[in-house]
Image (tube, rainbow, N blue to C red; front, side, top):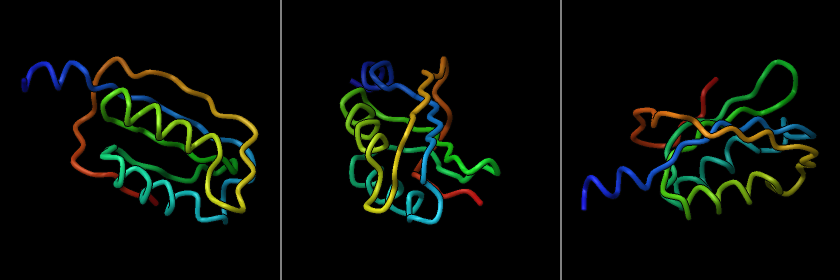
Length: 98
């Protein structure tokens, strides 16, 4: 099962645009990701967007992406750029990077 579980994992790179800074987006993303079992990180970008690397199984990732498209209360997400990553980064938890 171990090898199959690894093969079923996927990793995505997300860049979220809109009113996504100053609305607890990173904090809430960390809480949602941890609850779903998604690993990776989230950080604010200087241009006002939020960047995320997310790793997990397909169902976890799809649920997390759906949350990212809405964000926390107070956020106004106008665009989510999504790119699958060819390799799974080594991650043990979901972190907020500063």
